[in-house]
Amino acid sequence: MRIGVVHVNTESASGPYTELVTANLERAKDDRTEIVHRYVKHLRRATDTAIAYPTLLNKVDVVAEMVQLEEDGVDAVMVACSGDPGRHRGAHPVAHPRDRPDGVSDAARMQLRRRFGIVTVADRTWSGFMEEMVQTYGLSSRYAGQRQLKTPTAVIFTEGFEDPESVGKDIRARALEMVEAGAEVILMGSAGLSTFASYCGIKKIDDPEVPIFDVISIGFKCAEMRAQIHQKMDVPPVSRAGWASEFSAKDRDRVNRLFGWAPVSNE
Image (cartoon, rainbow, N blue to C red; front, side):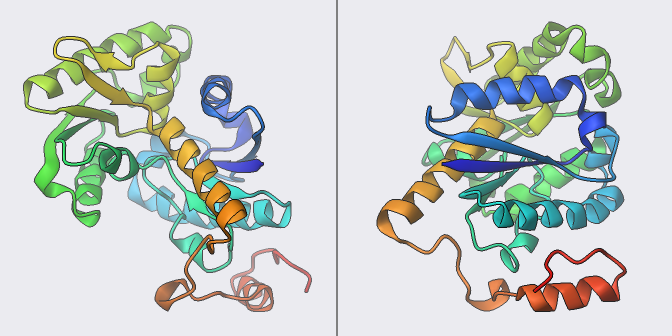
């Protein structure tokens, strides 16, 4: 099985983060699964992925990489960002399962009716978006709140690579605060923080015992599972009803030309 992973920064800008996230996914994947990494072409700052405007533009790159991955023959695609950029927009051109490391959906539902809290980055824009996602996915009744790291995001994704345990210490402290506020499950509301958490071996709070979910790994395992369901049970990987109606390669080329983008297919 081949699972495509779309990263929301360019490969050159991702730098040492690529090594951390790859190591996490290699630990999580099935032994027979191959990971196929893809990177967007333009966005270069981790801090920009926490802001609405650059994230909006970045969705175009994300969907383009999803389309290319399907043409390259992967069995499922995951977007490596807890904010879900491009996943629903990719419903039109991509026929394979699409998953995401969604900090307020998959992992929360895995824990049945338990109350969950979110630990996320120190950005008002991103924390606001996390609140919106809780409401969008209908999880408000189980939401115990969120805590933001004390370490600035720009420091996490620069100096943090030299001293990841300093980020881990901040994550542990904020997770403990969430447990004290009533959370029974902790979700990392950031793909980057998820990667740091797993790298530092942060899996739970001990007293009381509360799991801490690396949503990158959860998203990847969900992508594997959905691909297996399609392969073994012949269940369609995506719905083509309503807004998710298929948009043909010919129409994609036509619209891409209108916007001045390179066509994704020559058919």
